[in-house]
Length: 219
Picture 1 (spheres, rainbow, N blue to C red):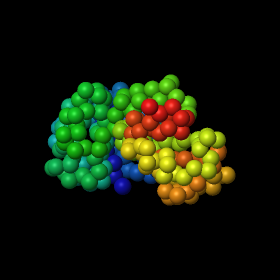
Picture 2 (cartoon, one colour):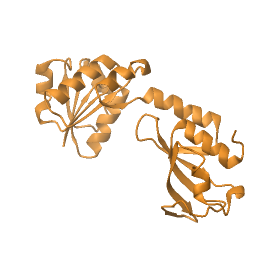
Picture 3 (cartoon, rainbow, N blue to C red):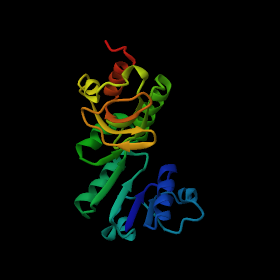
Picture 4 (tube, one colour):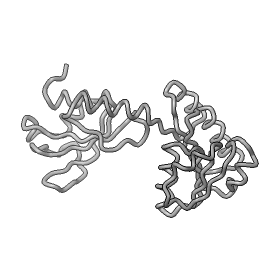
């Protein structure tokens, strides 16, 4: 599979090497030759120097043969335009865009791109770690709007049905329950036990609400 990475900053260089290690054919585009020095010495993909908005540069990168493109420069505008060209002109099926400035994220969302906002996600994750240790995020499918969390079931909820917990929260859904090292898919009548680890998908407001319910501190 052929992948183009536009931007050889810290994220682009690391991404290119990760993809290369998975046996993808990777081409990296950057207009500053020194940027390629960030690539791991073991990287043996292609590098193309030039402006990513240039048709000649994109064709040197064999964009017509690409299966995916990641626009990860620190310019949201450049990322948006390159991604739009890749998707509409070259019909690349998988296009991912980095969001550098959270204030410009609505602009990227208007294009309907797959967006990765490390700034927004990093800020939210840091907030979670600072504000509470009673729940932990284990997976984020987007940019933090909904995440999968793990919650430890306290003694006070032993012997109570799962439905009692989720009937009180509209922004959470059960994903899995781990008991004595084994996981299974719970249903509404599953009896909780102290020490269970409950995996749930939730919004940030939903996980706080659910934690408060478990701790008996809900409003």
